[in-house]
Image (cartoon, rainbow, N blue to C red; front, side, top):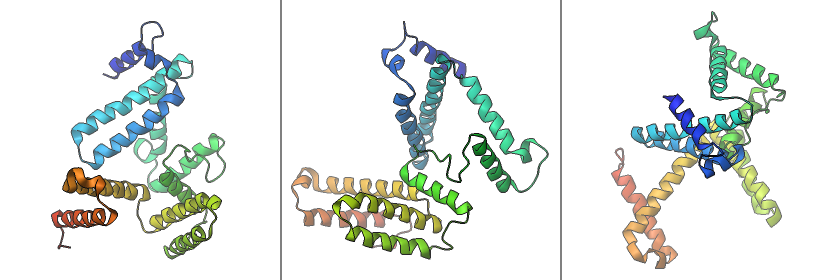
Length: 255
């Protein structure tokens, strides 16, 4: 089946008879689509929409085939090399399944990843954390890497105090300093969330979805008059939307 998709991509990329848009693309221009498709996969999972997940996984697979085709054209590698590389990596990282090793899987996994980073020349504890990751997710990964070296708070009280400290620094900051101080605050919040066992990236996605859901309820309630309402009237609609949402929740005990 995947051979059919590989053939389709090869035809799309044919400089003589292919699609002008597909032929014009390169790794950099396609990268944003790859990231977007990964998020759409995550969105389908969050919505428990398995039909959509099937489609989104196909879109994500297309991205892999697209990048592999461009690499093949450049004489770098082809899709079979990509498949072989990940197959080798998974077998290497799971000797308790594919070899004779047993026990200590988590420690072995981390040691193998460290060895792989070292082989790439990534000697530092923070090397190899992809720059293209979402900022909250990358912050968490950087913090976890640092924690492995012992550079970490002992409990959640430390990062909580840091959050309060960073808020004070924003209050005292000049306009030119605010961006940096806001960044420090966000980094501290991620650290606090990590110590509380909360995935900051997932938490913000859910907060975004909640805001969107409640805002749409406000618009529906007000109809065409929504934009003309003053802030107090909009705030009243927001409170109503929150109350209705809580009343509909399966475990709600009312307002």
